[in-house]
Length: 134
Image (tube, rainbow, N blue to C red; front, side):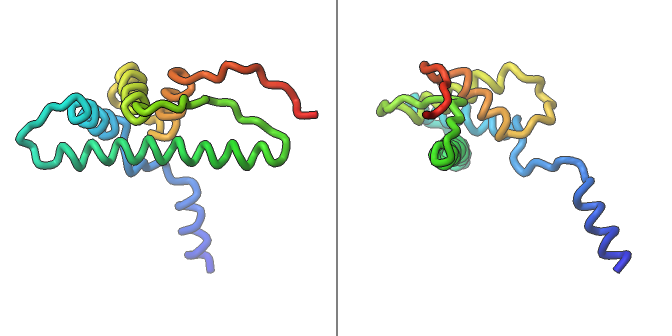
């Protein structure tokens, strides 16, 4: 029993380990920008890396949309960012992430989720002022 408690405590108090680092995400998103610009290289992993960035950022945005929808059901509006309904949204999301992550120190310990949240909130601010629901 003590051993299990020790393992549980170690797991709870262990440092943050990020499976997807800021530097990896930046390189992946730069690959996505190059592919979206029509560049073709001889690296066979460019498309895979580009798709990893696009999927991560789009998944984050979708997760936020679900959270915002559910929060609104209980009378709360998150209002952290408001994505436009444009055909080039994927490109704009990727560009926002690249711009934001290029401005953080290379060895940052900030999670990729926090970096994407910061990028999207700066690039796509919501125009309306928050008011309590009546």
